[in-house]
Length: 257
Image (cartoon, rainbow, N blue to C red; front, side, top):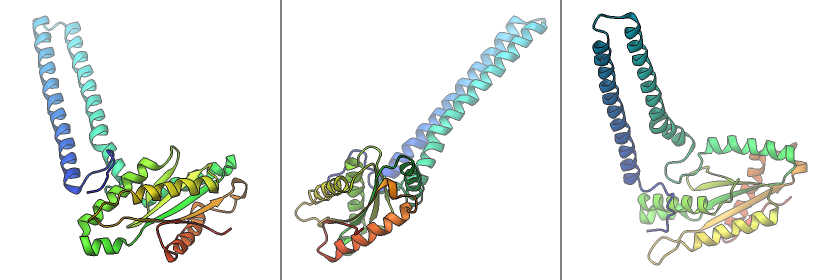
């Protein structure tokens, strides 16, 4: 329905299928590792019995050492598979929104404050952009929530594709997004935000709900950051967003200093 980036999370059915495949792969690897461990352990036991018919202490010791080494290797393999197939996906889901692939609000604000502190040390300027989907309630009411989810998914893919390396972006509410840029002047931030809004407009196709974004931009100089937080900067951007919404939508407004 919409131009969706390859990194997109996919619709709910596809995400469930992907999770099922990952769990199946984990289970298959666990079984294969257990079978291999059992076979090797048995072979070592037979080898030990064959080599030590009289129960020589040195040969028994070697057999025990080999069994212990095999067990340690088996546990290391299990740990790595657990981290890859269980722990990392859980950590990712804890920090990233399933639908859009963007940071969840809590993770976003935590990382935003960390970036603000770094900018305070380096005295780099910081820009915050509040983005909001225009008329999203109308899309849900007229086309259904499944279509609304696809719209959010396409916006998430667009934002991940358009942001620059080092930028921070997250889904802060139902259809609200926060974008933090460090080392970016107001003019640069305005230009890249306008580029995103233009790219969003290009997602529209005849017969589909019209997608539009409005934005509010606030910028602080790095030398004036000792008394301002990411939340303070976001509130200024939110006020600018309100003015953009009240004056035609589909464009970005810069906060007044």
